[in-house]
Every structure is written in structure tokens, then in C-alpha cells.
Image (cartoon, rainbow, N blue to C red; front, side, top):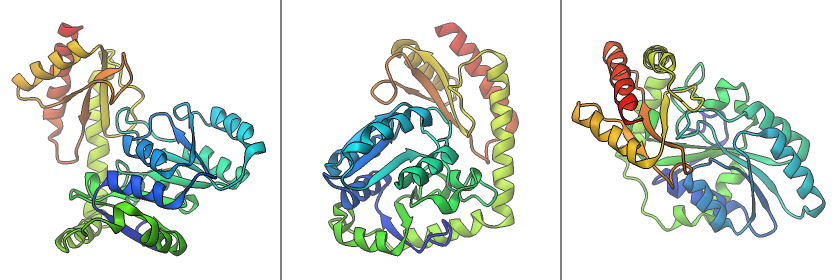
Length: 301
């Protein structure tokens, strides 16, 4: 995993939630400031709380607002700063502005942490994730990722410098006080990495990109709100909870499983159907599914 993310070392956790809470709690404290994207995963939010550091939430993917907030914090600076962001945002399917975040990291001498649970394995020329896609793989200090999602197993990890990993081995409570993953899990993860880095993996990523286009095209043409998705996570925003959940049930009755998402997972008024395209989906079935979604959403709306 360290080699995969071009870092010195890596540390395994039992889940993505355990990783984010344990990383932030283990590395940061009351004198530090965490700059966190407004749409970061709940595990990052809880990790910020557990760290006891000051948390400054910036508007989603808004690097200009982030820079203004950093300027405001600068006179009060005591400890370390870190920018924390999802790579691919799990409910919108959009991508963090990593090039801009790297610029701010360098300007303000901060650390940069990315939760790439939804990017690793599927984005970038060799599947190394959102940072590779954005051309800044070597500019990220803390690469958090999961063994689920693109790798198809479970568990999570942090890849980073030897100093960071050694520190977490001694300070990260969710790592220290949990039973380790069974040996079969990291073995399966290594096998999955072999596939990701192989010609087969490259072919799967190409097929995934093609499938995404096949699924999204009719939805966009029908005027569906896809929340700016540029990845395999495809939301169809409906708005209110009742029609959203009714749409999900109607679709399931037609043998199409697409989850309805309500607050607190998404903001009020942003309820949605959330689909996840896979490389192994049949393209014709994806197109048919999109047409069914269009019909059902039109009825509930």
C-alpha cells in the first residue's frame, strides 16, 4: 500500500471510520487547526472532534474561501495546520480541487490529508486515485484509503511518512485498542492491488469510464440534477424525503436497487437517489436503468 501511494510506510485499520477517527485523534491536539471541507465524510467530522483541535469548516470545494479562512487564522497560529478533504465526495460524486489545496498547503506550510475511499483503484492512469488524477500524488502528506470500494474487501489504511506512521502506532487509539485484521484480508488486498496495477485493471477502469457515460448521458438529457458528479458515484437529486424514498421503493419494485438518501447524510432539501456504477455492469442494462429512473422520478416529482 505504501508503494502504491508512493510513500514510505502504511498502517492498516479495521474500517474507514476507525482510520479517520484514529488518524486525526492520534496526530493532532488542542494547539492545532484542522481545515475541513463542509461535505467531508462523517468519520472525518468525528475525528476532528476527537482530536480536540480547533476545526475550521470551509465551504465545499471552495479554495478561495479556504484561503480567506486561513488568512484569518494566521495571527492566532500556535501549532500545526492540516487541510482535510475527501478525494471523491461520497454523496455528490465530485472531486476535491487538489491542485489548489496543494498550493495552499505550500503557501501556508500545512499538512494535506485526503480520504480517497472512493477514488483509489478507479481513478488515475494506474488507479492510484484522485491525487494521481490531479497530478499531485507526491504532494499529499496523509493518504487515507479503504480496502473496500475499489479493492472490494474491507478495512482501511493510512499511507504516509515513516515518522507519521510510527507516531500513529503509538498514539492512534482505534489502531492500538482493536484486534488486527485477519491475515486473509491483507492477502486479498495485495491480490486486488495486483489486478489494479495490471492490464486487466486498466481495462476495468476504461470500462468503468465508458459505463459512467452510458448511464449519465440519458439522465443529463432528461434534465436530472446529478449534483456535479464527474465520477462513478451518480446522485439524482429529488429534494424532499417522501418523494425520494417513494422513488427508491418504486425502483426496487422494478428490480432496480438504488438507495434513497435523506438528512442527516445530505443537507435538508438535497435528498437524492444515489447510484454507483461498476465496471462489471452491463452497458445496455445501465441505459435501461437510467430510463427507468427518469420515468419514476418524473412521477414522484
